[in-house]
Length: 165
Image (cartoon, rainbow, N blue to C red; front, side, top):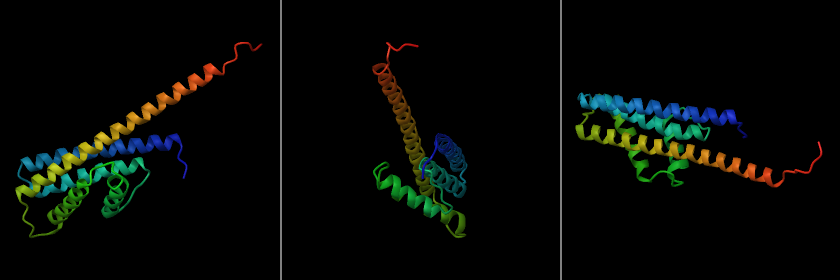
């Protein structure tokens, strides 16, 4: 499927929006943790992770409705290919389990250790994705500068100054 430049800009904007929402969720997770609201902290930390990895998928023009699909495709496209470290996959799966238990299990007792681990994982994932998005922007900028230089070099080599007008 061919994408035009508007699509690419739109994908980049969506990715940036998602990472910004992830950072908002991370901030909310930290505030909840500091306030002793560990269930809420687990939830917001997980959603920071979810939105961050969704930002990566946006750059690939991919969107999924189910959390398992988002995580599975992130692992396939970004972890198994070496873009992100393999241990991040286990941490994301653990975060999903903790969030699910915190949200749906009436008798789940949230420990401060689990909540802290969830928060640390969210910080790590958001930071890694933010760095990845930055490198993608730098790569596109460099590619654009290289294309401009190559075009200018080609034009100067093939310019005819002896043409009559």
